[in-house]
Length: 136
Image (cartoon, rainbow, N blue to C red; front, top):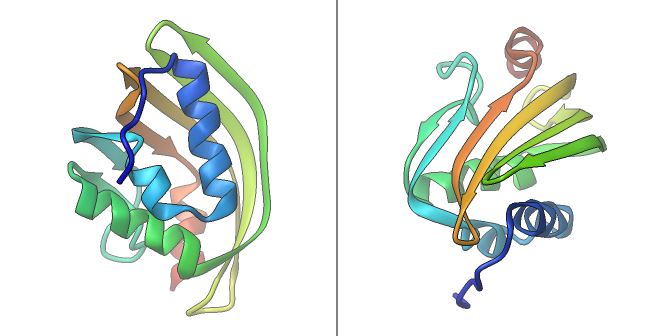
């Protein structure tokens, strides 16, 4: 793993999404602090990417699901707002769930907090009802 240099919140968020777009799971993981306050709201018993995570192995599993168990048909960021260490990302996506073949479309809001160039908080909000329908 390469060392992560100190960057401001906006640059760290931008770098995360650049690596996300490239499918660079190890590169994304190195942007997270450990421990990290990581959560995606939803039905944990149905939707495998939901629930809390605190360390690199559990974040790696989330990112593996996001890059291997679904096919992203659309992913648009409509706004990134930054205030100090806090960033909010708004957007929309459409994911095809490999296991069911169903399409999951939703808008999302993501609250990211960055300290010394590392993501210390990652809270994702999406339509959890539609997610559960797509995974079942």
